[in-house]
Image (cartoon, rainbow, N blue to C red; front, side, top):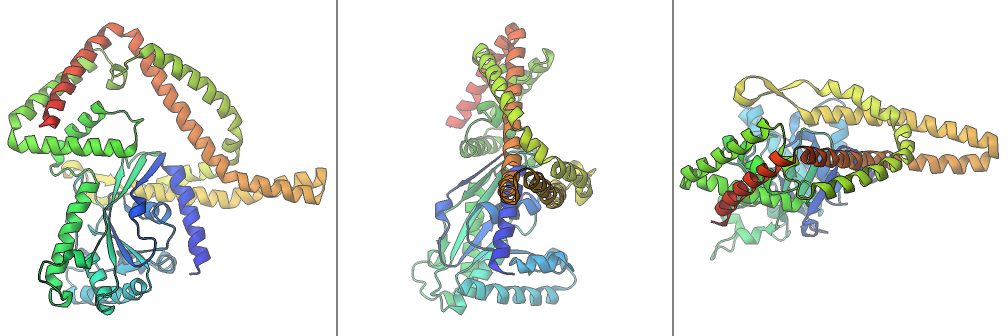
Length: 468
């Protein structure tokens, strides 16, 4: 498809993810090559949403994604995605009884990507080869290295291609208006994979592919919250919440989460009795919270009176602004309801079993995708109609030229006013939550103060683990 169509699709994706996610931060964007060929290798925690984020937030350059070929061979959707640059690859899990066919199709995929890399293009591939709910990085496949090596071989190893590791972190991927942190790692080239004494990459293909894949594995693990043992995930998450505030920067929150994950996993092996003591202290704190019907968000209040006053003023201010934002609420009424109507179409259980192998999990990304499709279909119908009605009203009252000018301004304000309404609604809800927690602290001041003491003791024990 033409570049203008790709750019239009990118703008549409950007508006979609900005409406769906509350905060999106990209750390290390300056590490992305401004020119020249590169292969971006990312983790894959959230299905379609991962591709939408990379395509819209990472770089203004065109991204050619590599995905399972069952998508590209779909009748209509496949044709559209191929036009956007998607390249299909045959996964071994999909061709267990047809290995020769899989090998043939993968060679065709490499042949498709090589000219794009030789022309200085960008390839994006999810190195794990599958989207998963696991909190650990799955084994990185050699496909990303094979694509780059084939392009370097075609250019006589003078292409200068970069492999760029990239980590995607969600605060709560299953929740609407979640936060997303994208971290770009340090790129490396083929020369960085050669050992001393190795001068000809053509004679060390297998070794280079192995070293490159291992390097990608290590780099990606350092860019995400990597939890080897799934049974420790709940403890790690709760300790990370105890230490920090959701209001902090996403980068600081992820780094703190990583430190706690490394400490917990280390002591789980080296000194399990110390970790067991921390777990017992944590369970005792949780029992005390439940006994007085309070939450950690209430107990963590340091200056409840000040928080109460600030939140109350914030609610008054945000409430007044929300009255002004009724403009955005009214403009986006039809698209938002269409999104709600379409989201149930994506609520089909996936094939992967849930925890304990009992019930299948819901594919949240698919539900969000259907909601986005419904929202934009509603916008495609409602926004032109609303703009036309404004034009007819203004043209009848003030003339044709005024009608065109006013309708143009109105049409351009539709999506920004929609986003502004959603953002102000989030702020109002945050002020309300802080106000509620501060009020509950003041009402239950005596038990809340005692719980603060237990909380500080627990934090000191965890800090001692982190310090070691």
